[in-house]
Length: 221
Ligand SMILES: [Ca+2]
Ligand SMILES: [Ca+2]
Image (cartoon, rainbow, N blue to C red; front, side, top):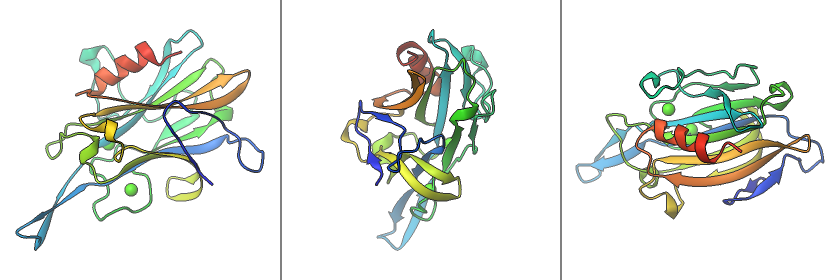
């Protein structure tokens, strides 16, 4: 049974059989917006571009690594170029999905960060995951305008879900109205073990730069 995460909840990465979750996917599934036109006789698909990213912090709360889309050039904000792998290769992003599901919910996550906790650099003390809406030409709205958007941790591969460990719905939450950035949750070390804290704080952030600054300031410890 998957855990339905609630805001502020902290969980152990322990499976129902007692073993630890060490290799898993953090993924986000979402759909494009289908608009009926001409009295419902035809429809138009509006692409929605969500971006899943993460920042990795040391025990002093200093950002020492990151993953965000290589399509982002944030050099004017003094931020490093986007990349899909953590430096220790423990985390890997499957790539920037620019559209969302075009034909309804396919049950698969559109952007995924795979995690192997055993390979994480010992200097890394916490990993904060966050989600943004990119301002593409089609959609500049908020989370509540998207037909579905959910985040989950599961065992399997980007193309096959074996077992969902925990999940969290974004698009159905009323407090996501007007919101375009979501600090989703944090993996962190505690007494030598990895744990996960569901954060679920949503913000109006018009740009990923604002969310990155926010995560570095308020969620790094
Ligand atoms: Ca994207
Ligand atoms: Ca999908």
